[in-house]
Length: 264
Ligand code: ADP
Image 1 (cartoon, rainbow, N blue to C red):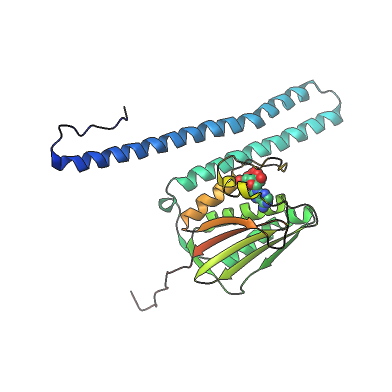
Image 2 (cartoon, rainbow, N blue to C red):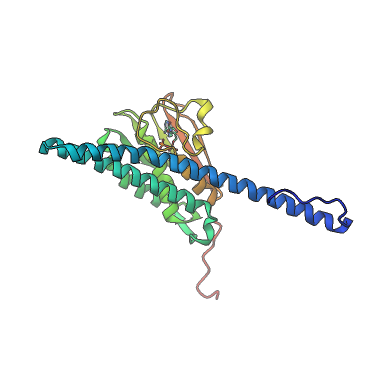
């Protein structure tokens, strides 16, 4: 039973303790409810690809024509890939949530290098959609404190979205800027995000109505979790060029100083 403990009849000096205890319990209960909602949503999301897989498999079992059988199996392979991507996303979210710093080593990383890595990895995807993927960086190392694997995942999610929601022939630009902060921007010339959805798209499983590209609605929640791990803020705004949007992540710059060699 998680209901609050009453303070009636409790000596004056013990009351603050009970009040604090009740507050703690109510926060725990909220957390528990959020977890249960997440599990229910996740199970629901997994059902769609699994139902598809079951139907496709049944069809394939009855197929005698070798060519049609091959088509069937290709569809099964694609559905399996989608299901496994979904599971990976759910795992990433769960991990990013479970007070990351204990699990993930934090080191000094160069944001510019990460950006070049992601641009390199996603270049084929952009090319396949005739999208011009470019990098505008400061040309200097831009150091932040973070986990390179998580940061790579975060940037890749933003760039992947930018490519996915931009029609063929458009452009995607990844930009870094150094001020008091380290700033990362991913700009696209795509379909844009309606103002009323610009905050909601960070909710788990939320997708803008009519965005027909393949997706789970987990990419941006992952982006936000990872940003928060790094004390960074992430926002979406319309591209001032008039078409598409800009995702902006603002990080604190690295405060770590390398020790001089003789300082031990
Ligand atoms: P997914 O892309 O898997 O659906 P996300 O959490 O990454 O999930 O994004 C949530 C929704 O936000 C998308 O379904 C899409 O409607 C919208 N969205 C995200 N990024 C962009 C973008 N760059 N341009 C337009 N819409 C976007």
